[in-house]
Every structure is written in C-alpha cells, then in structure tokens.
Length: 293
Image 1 (cartoon, one colour):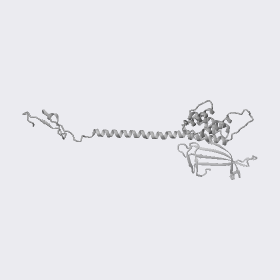
Image 2 (cartoon, rainbow, N blue to C red; image 1 turned 90 degrees about the vertical axis):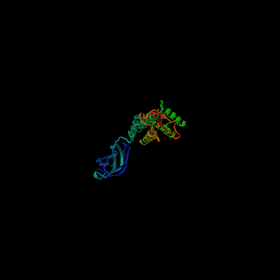
Image 3 (cartoon, rainbow, N blue to C red; image 1 turned 180 degrees about the vertical axis):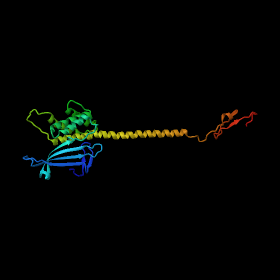
Image 4 (cartoon, rainbow, N blue to C red; image 1 turned 135 degrees about the vertical axis):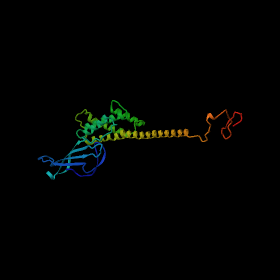
C-alpha cells in the first residue's frame, strides 16, 4: 500500500533536492514464511520514490532484506540485513556532460561495484583520478606517480590550474597507493591487504569533491565571465547606436539663421555687396537705366 509521508530527498538521477509528498513514495513489506534459517523472523521490503522534477520523472527502486518480529500481517522490520538498489544501480551522482565521458564512466563503475568488489572500485577510482590529471591538468606520463610529482611541482611553482591544491595532490597520491592494492598482487601472495566498501566510498567521495572543485568550479567561472562579457558587448552596441542617433540629429537640424536667396530667374545682373558686420547679405538688382531698383 502507498505510504503518506513528507521528507527531504535528493533524486539520484537528476540530483534535484525536493520534498517527498503524498503519492511520491511507495513502500511494502512482505514476511518470508520460511523455516529453519538463521535470521529468525525475516522479510523483504520494497521502496519506490518518484522524482517530482518535470525534466526527470524517474523512479528510484530499492529492495531491503530485513530481520524483525511478528509473522504474516503482523511482521515489523527491525534491522536491514542488506539493501539492493535496483534503480539506479548505485549511489553515483549524475555528473555534467562537460566532464569527459571516459572519466564519468570510470566514476559510475567505481560506484556500481563498490559493495560487490571494493578492490575493483578502488582501482577504478585510481584510474578515474589519473584521467582527471591528464585532462584537467594537461599532464600525461607513463606512470601516475610521475604525473603526481609533476603536478606537485606545478602547484609549488604556482602555475597549476585553479582549484588544484597541495592537499588534493596528497589525497590523490593516497588513492594511488590504495588503488595499487586492487591492481597489483604482492610478491608474497600470502600478504593480503583488504579494502572494505566504506574505504572505497571515501575514494569515490574524493572524486566527487574534485569534480566540484575542478570541473564544476571552472565551468561556473567561465559562465560568470561570459555573462560579464555579453553585458559589455551589449552596452557597447547600445552606446554606438546612441552616438549615431545623436550625430544624425545634429546633421539633420535646420540652421539657426537661414539665408534666403531669391530664385535665380528673378535676378537680373545681380550685384553682391560685401557682407555687413551682422553677416547679412544684400542683393542689388540694376534696372535698364542703370539705377538700382
């Protein structure tokens, strides 16, 4: 049956924070009528959430194996023994398309196998971070340790990309060491160093942090500067139009004291006198007798 609830939730598909309201959540628990197993009274719960974002509308679906008390319709889950995310397959966060596809794929896979194979997850995290160094920092060498040494030198010299800090370089170096555990066996095969899902999750969270501090911050900075540039171009165009309109108005305006000259057909033997101090021009027309008319 549907469960009426209200809580804050972030959709794993679109990363949109939202409040779960009536009709967005479904839960059902079934008692497992089984005999002679070590879990006492056990059950299975199904939980589904629908995203309210109109651009997403995805359904998140998870199955929980539980221990509890009661039987049949009185069963109540008390402890989650294991959880199985069906949709999406992992806790990976949706990443923007301006992060290279190969890097995003390694991140998604590291999240997907975190619980099934933490060593594989750590190895993928190492690979993902190496890809970020090669793409974001433009450093590509044969070994990750050499790339980290070069990145450290650039950070010290002050010419590393914005957002790359000494702390980030140190953290990546630790991931390199942990990832090597999953990628390479020790010379003595009896030496076993394990990695648990919680440790693999810490490496994944470092990747998510650097996605934010490197790629997302760079894109955000680019967009803000682009907005300032667009405003500057727009204002320059508006200023040019305003100046052109003002100059046109000056050229089109009539003279303050226009000089009136009679039509040419009405002039006979015109005599032009020197202009007076008042800058007026007199026109004298002689008659046939030679006297001014």
